[in-house]
Amino acid sequence: MDKQDNTIPQTLQQHLRQLGQQFSERLRQELPELAQQGERLLQSSEGQRQQLLPALRDQLHRLAGTAGTFGFTQLGQQARELEQQAERWLDQQQRQQQDLETFVAALQQLGAESDGGSSQGEQQRTGRPVVRTEGDTRLIYILEGEIAVGENMRLTLSNFGYRAEHFRTTSDLDAALQQQLPDALIVDVNLADEDCSGLDYAASLQQRLEVPLPLLVLTHQHDFATQLQAVRAGALGFFAKPVDIPQLESRLERCFAQQSGEPYRVLIVDDDRDLASRYSLVLRDAGMLVEILQDPAQIFDHLRDFNPEVVLLDVNMPYCTGPELAQIIRCNDDWLRIPIIYLSAETDIAKQMNALIKAGDDFVTKPISDNALVAAVFSRAQRARLLSDALSRDSLTGLLKHGDIKEQVAIELERALRTGDRASVVMLDIDHFKRVNDEHGHAAGDNVIRALANLLRQRLRRVDSLGRYGGEEFLAVLPDCTPQQAKQIIDEIRERFAELRFIADGGEFSCTLSAGVAGTDVHSQAEQLRERADKALYAAKHGGRNQVRVAASQEHGD
Image 1 (cartoon, rainbow, N blue to C red):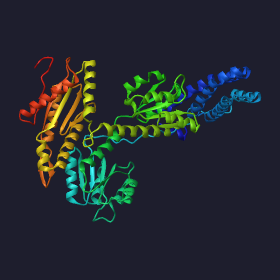
Image 2 (image 1 turned 180 degrees about the horizontal axis):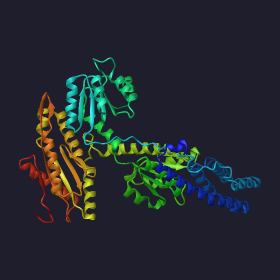
Image 3 (image 1 turned 90 degrees about the vertical axis):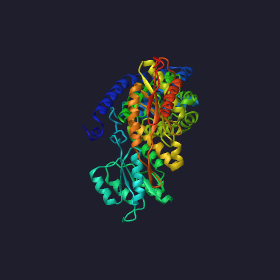
Image 4 (image 1 turned 45 degrees about the horizontal axis):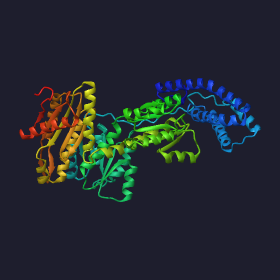
């Protein structure tokens, strides 16, 4: 096994080798067929040649893109040159007999002088994003020289559900780093009692670590030079003092969501099964979910059921071109956010631009290396998810907005009725929240809302949906969960929330919540289900608050 093979996970290497062998077998059939087509071209009349050339050009185009991907570099280059010759003849509609004979001879020798590469010719190590192990509680280290500022940040982040530790000096922080690495680091630029700035320290630390830490920077300085230095040190957030801690925590949550979120979903639309299978293997090895579609007419079903975050689209397909399919996708407002990446052996810039102008976001030329494919798809998927989250999520809490969480109620209800499983809907409300804003200010109120949002996010399951319904009110959808199970879960959250201590104006205060639970049954409708949960919440409020009530079942009337 050579050095290059050692860079590829063994199972992926075996699968890629198998696909390469399948492609080699395919070439043994396709190359003689190309030679036969060339012979027919030579023996045909001018009118017949005009009909034969487009199909021959298209086959050469597919071969030019596919061969290089599977490691047959020279064969791919030969096919591309012949494709370009056929394209010129189609444009000119005039061909010299001698040129045709030379063209056919090249077709008959196609691949004879190729590098004979197997699937190993282009194999490279695929880029996989580094994912940290997710524990029950995220550990945050804070380097802040001002005791009051650092302790306030530590306590607030603790209320948000993190395990935060505050350090005044770099030596104290170094000692803690020797014992355990945090999930993220917050550093103040100005460290009064230190020989170096916080940014200098952070930059030096990041260089020593095998995997850099997510870094957030605090500073009184807003100048460009300081922000540039922060970015060079690996900063993912830059916050001016006095720090808006809910905003800082929101950035932390976004960093962690990118690290440990759901795999990106990629739909490959390509009539070449072997090539699509190779792309699928490479992207799956990079941690993505992939579906392959060969029939463009099925695009609607795949978009609806799979909900891809990126579509990889072959430009040249029979009966429906890539740009035509892209325009069909763009005609539906629900799919406007999905990035479309064209994959093609087409090198003509004008044709690439024409495809992008009609519909599309990027154009990747075949053959493409494994690393380049992963990078192109990952960057587009990451950007699409960030945009989607920004549009559908509440800016303060990071939870789904009013309309989106209501839609989740309908989606989960439909699934529950279809499968026969039970599901529960929960309405939650912070008790006496107006008093919090009146007595402690809206900033303190925002901290309370954010703390409850984080607590709910951490205690509920990944399959549960959670949204900010409005103001201090939240709506949760719990699939495969009976009302009594939901009541127990929310009761535990209610008790934990009551234990939190918030700081405002030098003093401490606490809050409680009330909740109502409603379960699905055969008579359920989405709006009625939410209204039943809301009535149960109303009963909890008027029953003394700081409690959870379950709505009566419509099915049994109890």
